[in-house]
Image 1 (cartoon, rainbow, N blue to C red):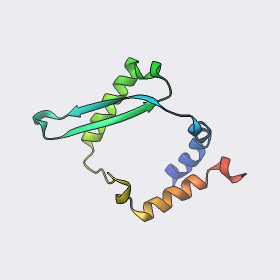
Image 2 (cartoon, rainbow, N blue to C red):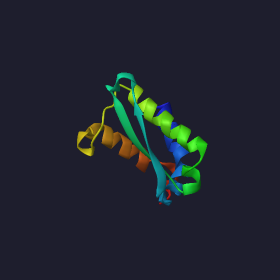
Image 3 (spheres, one colour):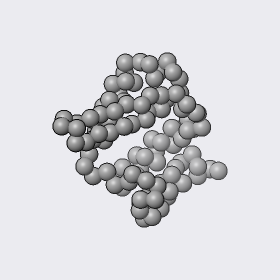
Length: 102
């Protein structure tokens, strides 16, 4: 419940930025030793200046590695989404404080 509350509280201000278009970015990959597992990740940002930065490239590599390290990936396709989880996430999004006044 605490996690849900923090998401409602903290993401309320982030939702205002959601209309911005993240058209730039980069594609990164991670191949685990032995080539038995590979991950390809697309990470978007607002400007090409950010995408060329070392911090962004490091983040991209870290995200790819974290995805490879997580054996409990539950959704790969939109068709795989559990309806109960979708309803819960939708309730969190619609319950955000900045949407209550609309």
